Length: 166
Image (cartoon, rainbow, N blue to C red; front, side):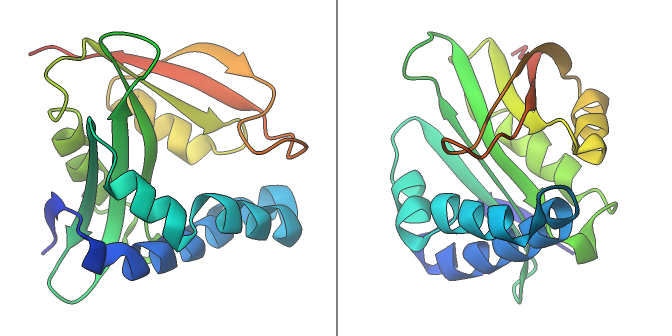
């Protein structure tokens, strides 16, 4: 059984491995090895993960059974828009998908921002499974962007929003 808890610095290597394996499984069919490996290096480096872990007004969660991590989630309050939390990451390792871990991670992270009245996220257009998941947990499409990756990645995405009620 997996428990949702706040991540610590001791988790970052396992989180990095989880993200790399999940990204390769999810995104390589759409974008190829070159783009996926560049994104992993850019977004999931030890330095990037450590920076997120220490950011004020954020929450970094893991799904842990005491031996392994099955998933992770990271969200933070917007620095530009009051009362807005941004869900930057929610990933479940391919071996554990479809077992409620993503739902548990989301249920916890959406309660971590009492000052927010809504949450935003971006999901790549090709990731229909993630789009369906976010729709199931209450998000709705509010727009589209041409690129969510680094310059030149050309990763179109759907913008989604959910009202948060406390």
